[in-house]
Length: 455
Ligand code: ADP
Image 1 (cartoon, rainbow, N blue to C red):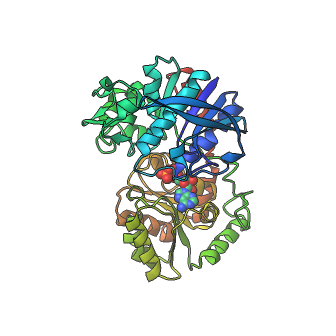
Image 2: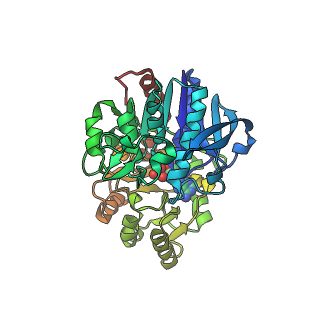
Image 3: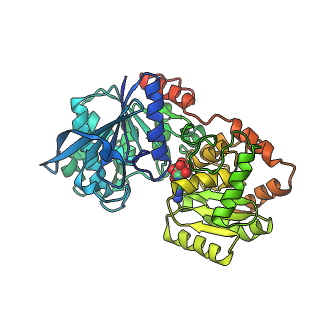
């Protein structure tokens, strides 16, 4: 079965967050199950490595009534065809740039649609708002392709002033209607795709329930309740070959269990590398309000009193970066902040921390706690979304209820002085299989049109 994935990011070519991990690692698993996946990505942008592909032609599409062209570069790996559409307004720009994103991702969707006309798949699997326009383009030209839309984070919907949107894309402005694209007088691309799709998935069963409530529905809870019959939560997996503490080339020692000497070597190596004393609380994260780094900073004096050190790797909002830097400046030897995107250091933090913190205000799935668990590091997480589905409190990690420093401090106090045994929790965390097999089975059923999908 031919399945076309369309995404704004995918490892190993480009990555901002978990979406890239998912689109890079699920298609090879589907290919091994006998499906025929193609992944469409924008080419020429911030990503790397795609230039090893070969030019295989070009497509033309109409933008504002004028003809535009995109060159196609193709690369095959692990049974997956990656097709990169080169568009000038992606050149030298980050995956998400804010201004101009509507226009460039709309162009990308138009270019993908032009290619899909020539090589129609049975199923098209769209990911988040940058690819949502495709659902509308496909239905507008009465394509019979089955459309699956996955919500990775409902906080981003692609909301824009109507402006020249309809003129540029060629879609009829009759779609600016509350049962289609319209959202408080604006164009909401994700809403349009959710209404149009044959099936909607999101990345964990709990998040699937949460987004149908006013609290986490981001204004689309009504739409999601209305279309709840076609919405299912399928828990994200991780690439267990890439994230493997027994073979990881970024580590100075390897281990297969929580009590292997290699695990302790990784703890000592991290402490030496980042020059911290005491057991390390690790964080690898985009620095945005969602992730609750401010909760950690507020709890910091008490965490230090408990004897922990803190190591934060991440970048994002300027205010949060500044606060992390200030905490590091004020607590030399106890707090380290690396304002960076550093794949290798991330691996060493996952392997060498005493506990991994994810105090998110909301978390659709969360991959980093799954990675930490695979590396025998105890996740300490807030009870929300996929964190509820992946961390069993007191068994494979620790959970706390409120997005407040008290909860975090209480959880870490339990870990430090309570009856919980670190290595027992870590061993149980490592027992969980975070691979893609179960989700791949669910997607294969969903692509076939099955209504009974194991979540
Ligand atoms: P989100 O998609 O909301 O950012 P996830 O937990 O689903 O959160 O996925 C985050 C992914 O990005 C993980 O693979 C994590 O290791 C990676 N990551 C985030 N920040 C950094 C960073 N600064 N350096 C290296 N990897 C990072």
